[in-house]
Amino acid sequence: MSEQTRTAFTVGNEHVRAVRRMIGAALAEARELSVDTSTRAMAEEFLRQEFERTMTVLDRAREAYRNAAVGPSGEQTRRRAVELGAVRRAMDAGVQARSPHLASVAVTLQERLPDIRRDVLDSEAGALTRRASLEMAARLIPPDPSRWDTSVGHRLEASDQFIKDVATLQERNERAATGLRRVTGTSTADPRGAALQIACYERMNSQQLQDSEQWRKQVRTTHSVADQEIERGLTKTGVPPMPWAGRAAPTRRNGQAGAQDVAMGTGASGAGPAHLVPPPKPAQAPSIGMNRL
Image (cartoon, rainbow, N blue to C red; front, side, top):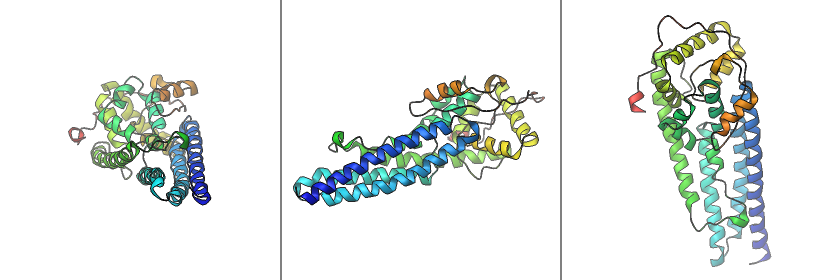
């Protein structure tokens, strides 16, 4: 191996290590942002922006490995470049589709519907949300170059599967959003979280359905514009409008505990609502399109 080839290979390795540091720091910061309800939507946007920054470094790493892939001995280096290309495409798919931040989903469920949180996350929509999450895209990043084995090729398959899961979640959300719009009358121009939201409605009891409907009306009529915007952001995590469980403001510790129940993320906290008066008759869970999710 020539000095030039060796240098290119070393540069590629250092870029991969830089990507790992960037993604690790971004995930940690996103978890911190997801702790508070007022910055939870910001957590997802921040992580997407960091992914975009990281993709530039991935491109540099891939180019360096290409330059180092000389002769028959460069096969492993060529495979590294190919794998990085697949990871880059997967990350870009997550950014473009506005994939969910799983930590924010988990903590919002813990705050609002703790008794059905596990059932929701284990549902078909919940499993798809996990598979298409930004955290799952981050897991595609190769390990430290000293431990990176390209002989298996599973990273190529995993990247392709992630892209398919992202597309499937988009399609499910768009289909589910139509049902939500017809039943609740709310805008679904942004369909994110709609499939998971219906999974929640399917598992909520009559009292929870009543509380959700009353809370949605209360926020719309008595809360500030800023609070309404926060509520819309929370709903896009896939959790229906809902007061905090037990009518009490969630604590930072409780919120983090809820998110830690999911393998990739943490988060929580927010302000407690006013006392709710249940409506005169039970609200009905959206049913349009449910059997097609």
